[in-house]
Image 1 (cartoon, rainbow, N blue to C red):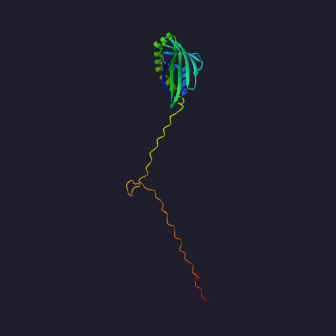
Image 2 (image 1 turned 60 degrees about the vertical axis):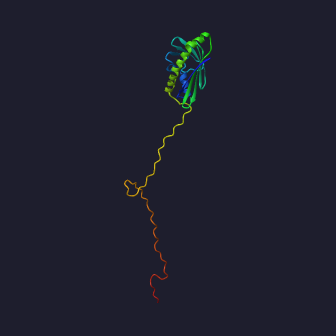
Image 3 (image 1 turned 135 degrees about the horizontal axis):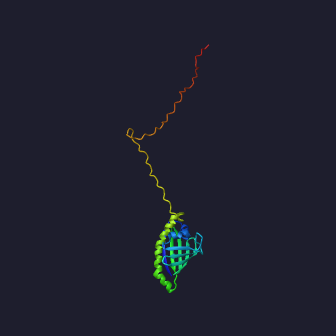
Length: 207
């Protein structure tokens, strides 16, 4: 079995990237300009069991089948001048999703092996180099939720501490005036109390 693998990072959540892959009307947005996709279903999204055909400029065509899907992977089986599987996996990685595309070619007849060696390998590698960056642009242009694990938000900048005002000697120019602090008045002295005299307040004549 021959295996070709390419990987890109997409700033989007894994479900968002998978939806872009399985949405029929988005195929022409990210596929190479010389590839035409003909769906075998009227549904807007491809599901397990759905079929479609890819035609490459020059007369090559491949019949694809959605063989299986999980929360993180989509598997296509294809038949044409050579046959095999194409696997797309979507792995969250921080604020991005790692999109891995693997092309596996099964061993066949000598004619199939010759077609793969002379045309197939170079054709697939060239299309992967073109299509994966286009796929990333489509996914990020659609927008939506970010990846599952967001990086921690940066702490907001704090203002430097303010130094207390410097006291200046009285009379200095530009000296900061200090607020007047009311002074406590001493308590008033109590009235002068003298002890009462035993003598009556007015003279008394003795009779």
